Image (cartoon, rainbow, N blue to C red; front, side, top):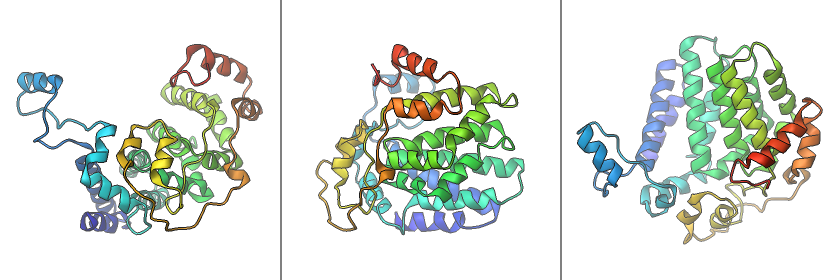
Length: 296
């Protein structure tokens, strides 16, 4: 696996679009192998029906999140992500940095979207990598991509990536707020030039932002065990590392104001500085009970 990652990292570090595209495909292929079941896995009833209707063309079945813990490949991959050398998220955000410095054209836009898609996946598969976005440099990259100069497809992909970066990581949310992220979001929402699709995703983001917060996940070099981190999360990946023991390596994470959680009311007051109908959003969030009814 290290050899595959090394090849992809070499391509991702290039300034050549062809090599970057190849590196992104290599990372995508690796993640696909981890997340898709092998051909020897027993098929479900739905998969059997699909094979009868369209034999030979059915895609490999996806593994459920709670099945990944029994996969040696996923365990090895997760362990590698805890270190700096093989961390995929770091390479992807650095690749995004180089793409942002290039001239805007159709091919470069496609590479940015593909990079954002992979960042979303790796942040969900390896939650400790979200700590990258506690740094202003990387959070600023996402906010830059929300500027009106970017196409709606990039803006939509960025909003989803932002959600993946903020999930259960209040420290990142504080960085987002300190960089006037709420101002960026609301200005984009109010702009007449913003597409309807992007505005819908912005409303979804505001619903997400107003949800109650949970404590930050530990960083990859934290002495807190990974199982404990996953148990605080509703993610089904919690079962993946029940038997994993803490290595004791790394520094203990210091408490700081940036890690402090905020209530829905506190975030409502912050958002109200830029948006008039925040009370309606909160009431709608309580009445419609999205996200499992966490505010009910």
